[in-house]
Length: 162
Image 1: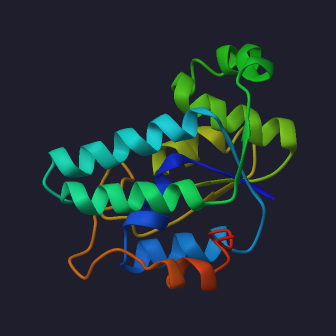
Image 2: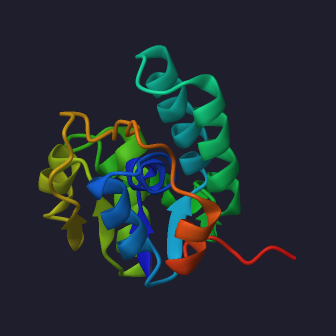
């Protein structure tokens, strides 16, 4: 069981390079948990890839569809609010939601954001995906295209379709 941040999930569905492969491998091996905030953050990250010219709108939409197929157990924010507030000096409220959830569940936090990893390390176990090219931890969409459903299914990242 692991808490995964939005950047890792975006990498899993929108990056066909080594970072995406690493994210899919790590995600496919255990139950995934995240605060409900993750949905909005993934959409925002995909929007940023399009606006920044790293992805075409159709590719981002396909990545969003793949994200919708991920087996992520989402958690309400309300039980985390007090802890999110307590973490205000270390991380943003958005990042604190992931840290607080990892603490609550007593599981590691998986991120590609080195800054978040450093800040969260005092509060929970952190697993950092290394080698992400951009300073924000957001992956870029590789020219070779998005991972296919078969790529994701073989890693156990997406649910079997009914």
